[in-house]
Image (cartoon, rainbow, N blue to C red):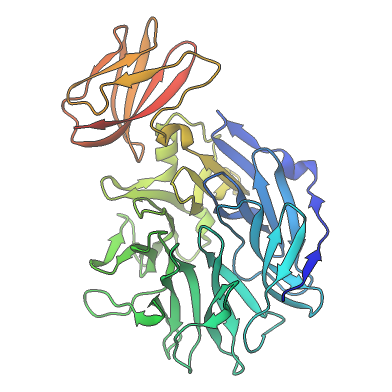
Amino acid sequence: MKKIYSLPFILFGLSFLSSTYSNAQLYNIGNGITPQDVNNAGVVASSAGNVATLRWTVEDGLQEIGTLAIAEYMGKPLVGEDGNKIIAYLTNPETQQNEISIFDFSNKSAIFLGGIESSLDNSKSSPWGITNDGKAIVGLGWSATGKGRAIKWTEEEGFTTLEHNENVSSRANSISDDKSTIVGWQDQESGFRQASVWKNGVQTLIYDAQGNPVSELGEISGNGKYAIGANGYNAYIWNENTGVTYITHPNAGMFFRGGATSITEDGSKVIGYFRGWPGPPALGEGFIWDETNGRVNLNEYVESLGIDTKNLILSLPLAISPDGTKIVGVARDNNYNLFGFYLDLTNYLNTTQVDQNTQKINVYPNPVKDILSVEGITGEASLTIHSLTGQKLKETSTKTGKINVADLTKGTYIITIKTNKQSTSIKFIKN
């Protein structure tokens, strides 16, 4: 039985708590903060200074969970649907080993899970992925021979080591919500981290259409159908049936490279980055991708929705919530200072968004074939239609509350209605 430890719980000073935002959509979490996971409710799991684990919400701000007593951070802090539980890499006070831990925010206590056969440099195990229900954790443990091993933990079974080549290291980075599929990497003899998929416990190494090994898979969609990573100069998406699909950039090449960092539960949206090489990812540019619109610069996407980015470059998006409404990562300002950011797109992606303090606005018919009508407005209003990735498609001013959408292709769009009193964004379907 795992012991439960009460840990010190510290609020950061005002310099960390002074989040800035525009229209309650884009938040500056703090200088030097690296947000690495976010759930549908907007709870963010972050790290700072390569030693600390933090939890952040709009309501509570930054709150520290624990600081490593030994060495530096491995893995990443994670949060599932239960926002009170953060999966972290913490120092076990009993063994002085850093290991996968479950921190319960509600009672400020931690459960230390240990590891497998051995440890290396005071590291027993490190967390890299969880199911949305938080009941399965995957990551890296250490063998008695000093090799990294892809591992999975559940409360029922404890730690299990995934299928592997005994002579090289491996790591599990992400797990599907039904726990059947895990993705990560396994070293080749040369040291190249080849993408690996474990389906129902059976390992498969991934190659592209030309038979070349593909670099590691970083995350799998909750439904287990798609996974993402970086290979060569580009980001990519992998599917068991279609293989590797690249997300490209016109400047991609030897000195400009990219990768995908996170994917939604249904696999419909991917985020990632491209940056000058060599150089830190946070000095590049972020992107959001879907099958219809392809890769769109993240700043352009956000600004097209009417969100003021306050001159921040959203250069390194690191996680997108399972439902696709929240994005977190690292941004930079014009002086190359780095900040953690939290982007809430709920109002733009929900079917209907209404400010409860203003007049209710809606659109009909929905789905629509030609004329889309807006109800609930009086006087003149501006109507703007965007694709789901933020590309502006139509814009007009109207007193009748009508806009012709007959020339739009079939699909889902967002219309933003602005009056002198309010702004409302509504999702509609074009038939």
